Amino acid sequence: MAISQEISYRLERLILDGGLAPEQKIPSERQLAARLGVSRAVIREALHELQGRGVIETRHGKGSFVASMVPGANELGEPSPLMHLFEGHPRTLFDLLEVREQLEGQAAFLAAQRATQLDRHRITKAFRALEDTDPLTNARLDHGFHLAIVEASHNPVLVHVLNSLKNMMLLTVQASVANLNPREEMRNKIVRHHRQLYEAVIAEKPAIAQKIAMAHVRFVSDAMRDMEKDGGTLIRIPVNPESSVEHSRALT
Amino acid sequence: MAISQEISYRLERLILDGGLAPEQKIPSERQLAARLGVSRAVIREALHELQGRGVIETRHGKGSFVASMVPGANELGEPSPLMHLFEGHPRTLFDLLEVREQLEGQAAFLAAQRATQLDRHRITKAFRALEDTDPLTNARLDHGFHLAIVEASHNPVLVHVLNSLKNMMLLTVQASVANLNPREEMRNKIVRHHRQLYEAVIAEKPAIAQKIAMAHVRFVSDAMRDMEKDGGTLIRIPVNPESSVEHSRALT
DNA sequence: CTCACAAAACTGGTCAGACCAGTTGTGTCT
DNA sequence: AGACACAACTGGTCTGACCAGTTTTGTGAG
Image (cartoon, rainbow over all chains, first blue to last red; front, side, top):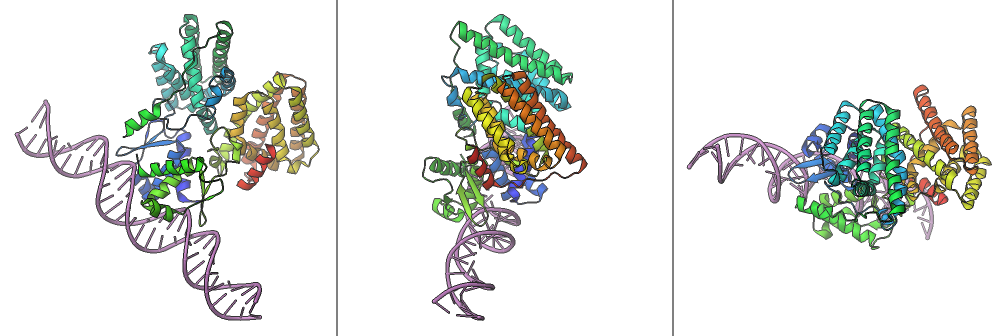
C-alpha cells in the first residue's frame, strides 16, 4: 500500500481514537515529513485524503486542524443524502430518534466506562457551557454536549456512525429545542436529564448513564410525538446550513 | 481557494454529471497536468482528495478510475470510509461488533413488532436457506438472514445506518464464520441463536428477540476476543473488493 | 509464420529543493 | 508605549528526477 495512505490511516486512527481533539492543530507538514521520514509531498497527499474525507481542515498560512463535528465550524460537505427524506417527512425524525436512543445510550455507557481525564474535562466544559447559556439559542451547545460524550466512548465506529448522522441529528436537536424549550416543565426535565447524564458519566456509572441517555431521547421523542398529535404543528427547522458561504468567507 | 481543490471539484462535477461513467479511466496525471496547465503535484493532491471522498480509485501502474458506486449500494450515504480502518486493525472489528450489538438488537425488537406478512415470509426464506446450507460457505446467507430482519424493522434510518456498515459487517460475519464455525460447539450455539431469534421475531416477541440478537452478537464478539487472546491468530479475511461487490449484488 | 520473452513506453509513487503566498511574532525606531 | 517593517513560521505550487508496477512493442528463436 502507498505510504501516503498508510500515513492518512495512521493519522485518522489517531484522531478518532482520541489522540487528537477537534479544533486541535496538527503538526506542520514539514514537521510531519521530518518526523515520519518521508517527503513533504507524501504528507500533503495524505492530508488531502483526510481533507476529502472531512477529517481535517487546512488553512493557508495557519496549519491543519482536526475538523470539529460541531456545526458552526465548517461543513463544506453536501447536505446528507438522507436529508431530503427528512423534509416534509416528520416520520423520519422519529425514526432517527429511535436509532439515536440506542446509539446515544451505548455511547453514554461506554463513555462512563472509558472516559479519560481529558474526556471528562471536555465533557464538563461542554456541560457548563450548556448550563450557562440561554436555552433558546443553545441547540448547538446541546449537540456539543452529547457529542463530547460520544467521543469519550472511544469507539471509532460509533463515532463515525453518529457523525454520518450529524446533519440530521442537529435537526432533531434544533427541533427539540425549538419545540420543547419554550414549555417550562419540558425545559426543566431536559435540564435535569442533562445534569443526571453528566453526573452518571463523570461518576463512571455505565448502566445508569445508559439508562438516562436512552430515557432522555425517548422523552424528547415522545414529547414531540404528542405535540404533533395534539397541536398538529411542529416548528419546522429550515434546512439551510449556508455554512459553505461562511466557510469560503472565512478562508478567502 | 487552492487550485488543487478547484480541480478536484471540477473533476467531481464532471464525473457526477455523467461525463464519466463508473469504471471508466481518468486521463493520466501527466496528461491532466499538461492539459490543465498545472504541475503534477497539484493533480495528485486533487486526486487524493477525490480518493478520500470515495469518488475515484487509483491503481499503481494502471491509472485512476471512477469508483463503482456499487459497494454499499449507497443511493444514500457516502461510500463507507470505514472500510480501510478495518484492514490490519482487529480492534476495529470489536468496535464494530460493539455497535452491531445495539443496532441488531433494536432491529430485532422492531422487526418483531412491525414485521408484515411479507417481511415474515422473507425472513423465513432467509432462515431456511441458512439452515439448509453448508455452514462453511454460508457467510452470505448468515448476513442475508440478519439483513432480512433489519429490513423488517421498517425504520429507514436504521436500515441506512446498517447498510452503510454493510461492507464491514460482511467482513465480521465472514470472520466469525471462518473462525467459529469449525468448532462444533460454537457452531451449534450459533445455529441455536439463529433459530431462537427467528422464532422470537415470527412470534412477535420484541423483548425476547432483542435480547437474543444482542446476546448473539455479544457471544460472537466474546468468542473471537477469546480466540485472539488464546491462540493469538484470527483467520484473516482478505479484503477483496470484487467479492464484496458480488455479495452486495446478491443481497440487493 | 508464430510464439516467447525482453526491452521500451506507458502508468502511478516518491523524493529533493526551490520559490510563492498568507500569518504571526519580534524587534527596532520613533 | 505604539507603529511598522522584517523575520520566521505556516501551507501552496513548480520542477525535474528517479523508483515501481503494467502494458505494449518488437525482435529473435523455433
